[in-house]
Length: 357
Image 1 (tube, rainbow, N blue to C red):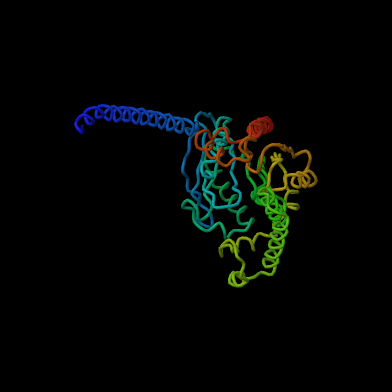
Image 2: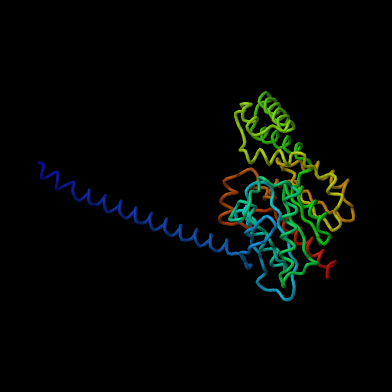
């Protein structure tokens, strides 16, 4: 009986094994094909039509590791856009997030200059020990350096900056009287007001209960008092707060918490293009709009508030989806930003070219 049963069912067992192997093979081939397609998409989508050059920018504080972007095809001297970072340990390309904009500017015939912050990407120094004035001086030294390059038209150098750069760019134009134009994306006005606004909006977005929001607001005010008292880092740690910042960050905050752009933005003398997002939870766009319209000459100011974008000028469909934004950044980086933002930057620069040439 054993032999009969064995001989009867053995072919079926072999059939199952063959069938499973075929399925596994098909799945493996399919996955391989998908992987090849994804790699191909990644390569194509991250192949930007511009020339990238690594440069060493000499400043009084040391060497900054920078990137100079040049158009692939250009005749004669070209205009330049200098990129001024927001907060955080940014490298020259802001983790490649600047590249789609660089490409668009290169296609318009513009060069771009950006650099890794001090202490990032091989640059000398420590960005957390800088004041906004230090950042402005650093940027001006980078501008003076790039002006020595034969391909750059030093009468067509403009600034682009986001977020914290809103405290830096207005200081640059007070040092350098030959800035051709300014593009500001979601700049804050007052350091303390911005911090309070962001803290509360982040909590609201998470659906935090009112009691917790009230508690966080009190914690914010308590920490602000510690900063105003000028506590050393050791004294700050001794207070016993649960979430403490690093010593360098504490130094950075103490140096810059009084930052307020209201007086500095009066000093713009060349066109200012201001971009704001209606869904920005980092910066109060409506407050920024109101202050700029009050303080900056109306002959110079052009404001665009895009209702369905955020602090980063993302497409509306990506604003509340970190997963979609992540995969878009990898496989379609040119599709991250809101089209209106790209279009209006292009139009603004076309208008400047008419005036400058």
